[in-house]
Image (cartoon, rainbow, N blue to C red):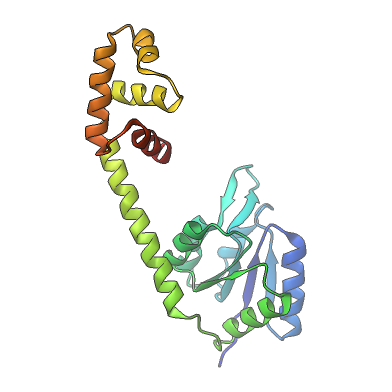
Length: 218
């Protein structure tokens, strides 16, 4: 079975260099790409060398200073014909789910023993390792469910008028109805009417729930 080359993408040079050396010792052609360097990852993806990309999720600031999110890179890497294996210290399950839903083969925790990480990457590059489809399918389902829930929240949020959003923003800040009325120079009854409208449009029963929605959307 053909062994594909491996590209390690991690902003921690110690991790990248150590993995590169270990995989080369297994006879696997491996290179390390520092995503924070210029040109870094873009140049690595522009070549015609397919294979396996071992990708961290938290990649630090890029050359332009903007934070690099590995989740956003998964579809870009997959579009080049390369496979993606996540190697991350993140415990953020929704982000891992998003990366898997975008096409990553699976994920490894950096907390695993180093030899186990190397062995799994090597076996994947050789086509000898297949990740259990059960956990992967569960993550993809979680991601789609969360995305659907977020779309529903966005739909409800879009119903609010600009003034209702301003009122809700004051409630998020802990302001009382009387405080909001004084700021906008309106009667308290007007603000209460606006609050009732906010609750109805967001399909919630209390101001606390409305505040929770605002914090999620905003």
